[in-house]
Every structure is written in structure tokens, then in C-alpha cells.
Image (cartoon, rainbow, N blue to C red; front, side, top):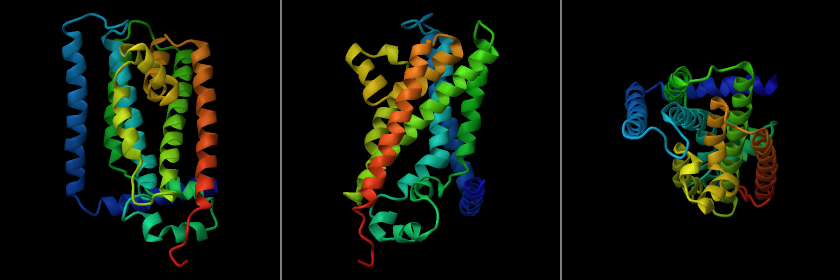
Length: 263
């Protein structure tokens, strides 16, 4: 409960900072609508010409797009802002502001991961959930309780994998504080807006188990449509647990290299 109260305080403070500039709301809204529009128009135009692509029809691909938008919005809401604040020339590691994080009587990884929020990402989240809801309505089969539970488990595994990867890339700042390593992942993450089955075999394997962006979006979409196997679901959960443990270990190992601004 203590950590939940801290998260609420962090979110409230971030909201006060962000809403101090009213123009931010309109800029974020425009950006969100453009991001939604390009995605939906692309899928609609494609399936206006063909019925299916590698077994994916319009509702299933729309569900995948909804998952991608939702995952990306959650990243922008509470994962990206905190981790990105550590890196770069103005980041907490380079400037030494990370000293104050180490002095607080709270777990360091928790503070580094949840201290900064971007409340305007809730606009993206609402739009992503709207796309998901539209896809569910268009699906030929009804959404059962079991399928919903499978979808939530798969989505939770995908979010855990996303957090673990970003935490691992962020941990590299302890070796090179001036660089924002997460930009490397950003380019690969764009590929998650399309079904993994559309890519060649070697790339499909890489996007599933090496840099598993496909597990973040394709697997939850398959759970929503009823195409996900039990083995793939278990593998996704196991992969998420393994990556989270490995990323946490790397972060704590990197902490040992941190030199205080006063040293």
C-alpha cells in the first residue's frame, strides 16, 4: 500500500507540472489523433483491397493495432518518462541528481521506474482502448470470460517484457550517461504494429524471442481472437519473468558503477 500511495503522489505531481501549460493538451491531442488516424486508415485501405493477409483479417488486424496503441500509451504514461529522465546530457545520471534518488528510503528501481508520469498519455490510452473495443465488436466470435482472462494475462506479459527491455537499455547509462539507449529499441518497436506472421521466418523468430516486440502485441491480439495456443501463452509469461529478473539484475549491477556527483 505504501508504494501505491507513492505512485498516486507521483502521478499527481506530474499532472500538476504538465497541466501548467494548456497548449500541451492540444498538442498531445493532435498528435494522438494523427497517430490513430494513420494507423486505422492504413489498415482500412489494406483490407479494402484484400480479405486476409497471412491469415489475418480486418477485425484481427484492428485488434492488433489497438493492442499496439494501448501498449505504446502505457509506455508513454508511466514507463518511458521515468526511465528516459535518467539518460542524456541533462539526465539524472549525468547531472548527479540521481544522488537524491539513492538517498531516499525507497527501492531505487521503483523510484527510477515510476517517479515521472505523463498524464496526457491517457488520451492515447483512451484511443487505443477505443480501437480495441471496435475490433471486439467486429470479431465474428463472441468474447468469452476465458478469452478475456487470456488476453489480460498476455497483455500483462507483454507490458512486463516492454518494461524489462527498457530497463535493460536504460541500465546502460551507468556505463555511458550521455546516451539515451532506448532510441535503439524505438525503431524496432515500430514493427510491433504489424502481425509477426507477415515477416520472413528469420525476422519472425527474432521479433518473437530475441527482441520480442511481437510478444507484446501479436500474442495479446491472438488471445483476443481465440487463436493463441496454451504453449505460446505459457512461453510468453515465462519469457516475461526471465527478462524482468535479468533486467533488474543488470540495473542493480550498473548501480555499483555509479559515481556520485560529489565524488
